[in-house]
Structures are given as structure tokens and as C-alpha cells.
Amino acid sequence: MSTHALLVLYGSQTGTAQDTAERIGRQAQRRRMRVRVEALDSYNVANLISESLVVCVCATTGQGDPPDNMKKFWRFLFRKSLPADSLCRLDCAVLGLGDSSYPKFNFIAKKLHKRLLQLGTNMLLPVGLADDQHDLGPDGVIDPWLISFWQKTLSLYPPPAGLAPLREEEKLPPRYVFHFLDEVPDKQTEHLQTPDNKAPPTPLQPFPARVVFNQRVTHPSHFQDVRHIEFDITGSNIQYSAGDVVMMRPCNDAEDVEQFCQLLKLTDPETYFTLTPTDSSTAVPERLPQPCSVRFLVEQFLDISAVPRRSFFEVLATFATNELERDKLLEFSSAQGQDALHSYCNRPRRTALEVLADFPHTTAELSIDYLLDLFPEIQPRSFSIASSLLQQPNRIQILVAVVKYKSLLFKPRKGLCSSWLASLDPSNGDVYVPLWVKKGSLSFPQDPDTPVIMVGPGTGVAPFRSAIQERAAQGKMANVLFFGCRSESKDFYCRSEWEEKVQAGQMILVTAFSRDQEEKIYVQQRVKEQSKLLWDLIAKKNAFFYIAGNAKQMPTSVCDALKEAFQKEGGMSENQAQEMLDAMEKTKRFQSETWS
Image (cartoon, rainbow, N blue to C red):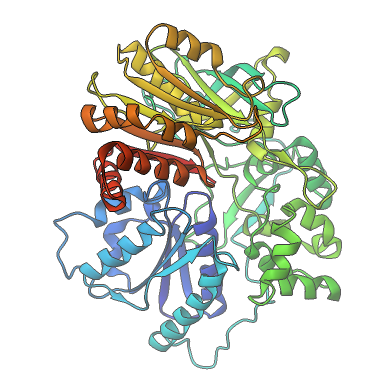
């Protein structure tokens, strides 16, 4: 083993950056290098000064924000008091994961790279900017970047003489060893604890909120099942304001859990085990109780129903003894096989569980100790809160579009979290969902006279319902909502509530029902039509403008319509209209929250 150690730090929101960091960790092991892989915020950043070789893998979230697990690191690194040469002994490289359809593409990686240079770091190669929109996905950038990284690194830190690197198909040691217990432990630690009464809930100590309402709000004949779900948060110490989001981790489907246990011969899900890390620098995942039951691991921790990443096939291939299966798994793991992997896995949205069933010989060879190397942890899902504590004390309400669609595969595809939430029926007895709240990316003005214009088609209206309830309760009446959906009779969410608030003079409502007439009408057309009102509110009354909803074409089209309004009503050129929008964005008078 090399005397040199590589530290791989990641900032990950959905698990992709963590997966890439772990992949770099495995490549280092194959090159006989000592390696640690850690989330940026669980690493003691003061130790950075004594490291020699570091790779940072980071995603960009929201409107150019750092992921939740690198926020502390980010604040520390940008302290003005840090001396300009404080990291002059450090060799480093930064790899960013982003999506070029968003305006702040890979903003965090670019800014981190620049900051590390300011602190005197020796950057081994230019910042890698992986892009979801690349023909080969993020790997189109990651693969060549890693080749350059290893060439550079191994020339500076050569492996010990006479030690050849391990081949790709050779098994690495698992990160943990399972020790099964003969009896069920007395203390059941897995059941939800109500958090300490003074502190608000956290990801590690969520609040078990009772589901008090779960109803479909779209017409039975409408293709999309959208749910209005309400949680009781009495006694939770949760405080939230308009624009905040509620976080929760879903459970795997009972049928999937059963099939998984059968495939892996985990005959008794009520068996308990403890985990021992194989490397002293690795910790047991904080969310796994010790001891833990097989049921908890499979139902609430391992992400068995997600579409697996390439790394899944890399690890699985090392177990293959059947020649046909091994060749296929090695192809899916290789840079050349990414088209084939995309056709097999991503396009039909095949789940990790279905892959195991497709490779029965290899699955039969799988060792339980490798479960945490193969499967990532279930990631929390976020939902815009659609209610206000001022109008709904002790309640959190959300709007959830249940994801279900056909692919090339026989079985319909389902969204893990939305399907799980839709299945919770409070009329059959008490049901609890562990949740916590975090600050959202939208913030609303404090001045009661400042108007607010909101464009929220479909479930994008959720944060604006929260804002309108909150503002109306505070006597802030200058609220304009543009709402769009397919049909007035099928998916016009919160209709009666809007009508009451319009009646009470608390808001202006402008609607667009795209399928209720021959030609489709969308919110962006309504924005154009209301150019006079918008110009008056924005140019003369300093209004704030918000967009929330699906990131496909809608946000861009709404921005174009807004700039047209500036040109038409304000006599501006195209450039001036763009400058005005940019200035609004800088001062937070223009905000958007979109998702793909």
C-alpha cells in the first residue's frame, strides 16, 4: 500500500456526487493508495492544512447553492481571515456535477476551484464540469477527467515499486462486515423517537408527524393523481415560513422488500445484525441503529427501487462467475458500454431490484457484506410547504403529484416517495411520517406595501399557497397569482380558496387552462396579456416576481414574456429588458424554484 493518502471529499444533495466520490475511492484502492471518502461537512476542515492530496466532488443545488452536507465547509472556506497561502502545500482537484439546462451550471465547483487557487492550492488540473445534458450523461466528462487526474497524480505520487494495480474485475474488501445475532435484542432502537422537546427535528432526529388528511384533488377521470396531504406537527417545535420545504425519507414497497429478501436468501427479515467497518477511518452510517434488523435495512435504508448507477454494475461484476453475465456486467461498467447501459437501464427506468433478478447467477454469488457497497442510502425527498402556520397552526400541508407511468417494461414505473405517501391512509388508524423542515430557496418581502407576483402552474402553486395564506393573515393584500393547469374542471387546485381570497380583496387571480379550448393557452401567454399590470407593479411599486414549477420550457417562456412586457410598456430595447431582469435577480426581486 502506498504511503501517500488521498482524501476524497464530497458535497452531495441527491447522492450522485457521493456515488462519484466513492467510485474515485475504489479507483484509488485499485491503485494501491490509502484513501478516505467523506462528506465535506463531516470532515474537520481545520485539518485541510495538513493534507497532501485532496479531490473535491461537488454538486450545485437550487439557484447556485452548495448542497446541505457542504454548507459549513463552504462558510469556513470563504472566511476573509484565511491567509492567502494557507493551503500552499496542498495538491487538489475539483470535479463538479451539474446540469447545463440550469442558469447556474456547476456554479459551486467553479467557485470552489477559484477559492482554492486564492488560498495557494496547487490545482492538479482544470475544474471538471460534468453535465447531465451531455450525450453520455455526466460520465462523458467524468471519465476523461479521471484519466487525466490519475496520470497527474501517479506521476507525483508513484505507487510502491513492484505492486501492480488491481484489475477492475477483482473484488475489493467490503466497507463493512455483518455480524448476525442469535437472538432479538431487548432494546428496540429502530422505532421513531420523538425528538428532544426543545430542539427542532433534524435529518437524524425527524419528528413522527401524524397524517391527518390524504385526498386526491384531481378529478377521477384526470390522468394524474395529485394528493393534498396534511400532517399534524403539534409538539414538534417546527417553525416555518412561506417558501420553506418539508423533508422526508420514503420506505420501500412491501412487495419489493419481500422479493429482495428472497433473492438474497435473507429468509428472516426479523434477524438482527451489527456492522463492523473494515477500515478504521470509516464510520457506520449514522441512520442505522446498532444492532439493526434486516427489515429496517431493506425497508428504510437501502435504495433498492432506484435506477442503479454505473457503480452498481462495477461492484456487481466482481461477483460474476457466469461468463455471459460477467461479460454483460463488464460492458455496462466500461466507458464504451454507456450507450448499452443507458438502453438497458436508464431509458426503461429499470430498478436495481429488477437488475438483480435479470442476473440470477451473479445475485446468487453476492455476499451480504457488500450490500452497503452496492446500494446507496435512500435519499430524503423535499416538498414545498403549501400552508402557513398563521392560517393552519400545528399543520404542514403539501401537494404531491403521484409518479406513475409506462415504460418498455411490463410493470408500470412508480415514484418511490409519491407512491408511498399516496398509500398512507389515516382512516385505517394512525399513520406517522418522520419529517423535518429546512429553509427553502424562496423568500418573500417584509414590507406590507410591496406587491408579490407569483407564477405557479400545476403543483408549482404549492409555495405560493403558503405565501398567500401567510401574507393575507398579515394584512398584505398586494398578491397576484398566475395559475395554469390542463382543465378548469379537472386539476384546478385550491379553486374555492382562491375564489374566497379574490372575493375578500386579498389577491388577483389570472388563470390559464391549456386544454379547455382548441388552441393551448399557457401561463406565459397570460403574463404577456397582463403586461400593463405587471409593468405598473414592477416599475412603479417595486414588486417581487416569482416562478415555481417544472423546469422544462415554462420558466424560460415566462421570463421571455416578462421581458416583452418591459419592452412594450417601458419602451425598452431587448438588452435593457434583460438588464432589468438581471438587476431584479441580483436584488432578489426575481426568484425561481424549478425542478426537472
